[in-house]
Amino acid sequence: MLQLDTAASIALDKLRSGGGFPPPWRDMAELEEAADRFTARFLEERRRVSGELGGVFLGLELLDGLLRTDDRELMDGESVGENEKLDVIRALDRQNAAMQVYPMILDIVLPLVCEAAAESGKKEVRVLELAGGTGGFALALAAETRRQGLPVRVTCSDIVPAYIGEGKKRAAQLQLPVEFVLLDALDPLGFGSETFDIVMVSQSLHHFTPGQLAVMIARSARHASGAFVGIDGYRSLLLAAGVPLVAALQLIPSFALDGLTSARKFYSETELGIVAEIAAGSGRHTVSCAWPLSVLTVRFGR
Image (tube, rainbow, N blue to C red; front, side, top):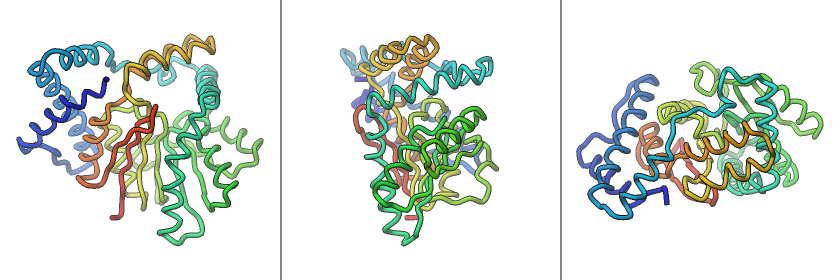
């Protein structure tokens, strides 16, 4: 219900007809500003359109406005220690395992891995996960590709040193060849000269502003020959209520609160498409729903 597809489609068509989309940019600073500015403009136009449509359309727009927030999750705050952050990320990993989220994400990513292997003729497909925490999904991907005999090299990155240390320990315990690196996904020099087939962000898109997400996509285009894949929760009333409720079952107050904040920050699929088109141009992206997930795929090299 919070996708507001009808009003969103009308609003975006009006903005396109005005000739201002996608906005031009010359460097990453301009890209970040352009994506933030245009996304805000789109939401304003969608509100205006919803008001004109009235009735249920206006009601849903008002509800979306009440739920929407720019608050940061506690786990992103500088005042939260690394031990507490580890408690939260471990709780998220347990929740993902219990709800079989990693198999859902594997179903999305594995076809792209197989495609990259077939098209490139490489002996090894390289996958980089940005903002990957302690590597819950990266480890699941490494385990599944090894089981299937697929030649895949997985690198998991994050900005929190404790996550990297924890990930390395888990990889050693599970005897999985996952490389963990300390990396700020927004650092222009962070990628170095490394190249990958697939760059992905799993369950972390909402931690970034539209401009930051656009920058990650554009930078990925310079380092990935295949695709950028962004996977996150589907923006809906059901998840807005369900995510914090399920999180509360672990009896960790900060985790439950972050679950509520996260669900309020999930992007609509139209917003994801707007950011991708600004960053990579038209005709390169698709946005789909693999309930309860939204999937943004941006293709490169084509």
